[in-house]
Length: 510
Image (tube, rainbow, N blue to C red):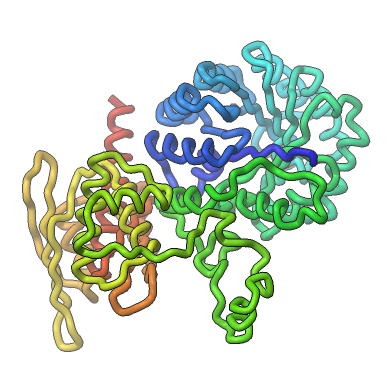
């Protein structure tokens, strides 16, 4: 079976999702999970864009030893040099150079003609090749590029030293039949194409990223660029879990496969969702909450008789156990820790202390705690950012004859306790107004969603919010059996992310 190289760009393109900013610790945590999943190539970031991105790529390069660690660079000497400096400590480093190739991009973004673009592509690939042997090149907006010019550019960069040529559907414009024909055209018209691996990078603007990627494989591509949960710019990228499980499930059609450890998929998906604040929709293929749920009586009857009646995959193949947590309020720390390890969580002593305390608090309120409840509690602790303000207490008074009122107490900088109260149109609005009076950072709430983690009146509720400030979006999430408390936690999580970004910006200015 021919191998398909899985190139994960969650830490680069995935982070470009609105509101999905990751700090260095978040990126390292995700990278470690990707390594356990046996991802072939990790695109760790875009070093020239910021000091934080450079440092994240550098640390990932130093720590991870198994996968190829790739750094993105646009076609400029400074970007290529920064990419090299960031990945030079990697055991298997790669520099990924990109440059627009479509007429619309060359005219409006680059303001260069074809000859200038061709020379720049050649020169920057050659510059990167002077540092390391493993070089990837992407002609951005390839699916809207004149094919003859695309062939010419690919031949030139391969001659200059590119070992992988990636064909991006940058704006999610193409359809499978058309994209397959483009890949076939590349193999037929680029004389030296045999010297490079052909890769594809598809966006999901028309919902065709996975289909286009699979079509490319049928015509000779052997690397797919994708992200966990399909996150990424605009509508996102091809979803890693969908690509991998499609190849695994339909071995009867595909003569190639991946070396991904699929049992790590669910844990990695949850981690990425928790750290980015990008909620996985319930009906998302493979890893959505409903992916292995059956509501119809006919379906349930079929599943009870033989799971293959209505399930084409075993949930255990992606790391779902389907088990229920049987620990209760009398359970000890050791049993709690062991069960977390079975679910794939490795917590340090402080994280375990906080998670266990949260578990005990919920165990006093809920008779039955499921694994999904536990995952929400652990995620609550793991996604805690550096807190400028900490929520200590929230109380509300509301009803159809009362004006909703909230009182909030926070711990501020230096451990100072501060408190205030406010009126609102509802209890959550009152809580947020009271918090805003204390924190004093202008922002606009742009999204508020709440979901139940499990069934029942005592279910843990999870709130996800997005706020905007200074043209940037910040995501916050919180979980609790009390939805008002969960809302307050989510808001504090988003505000602390905003405050951390402001502090980082001020430090850079100094």
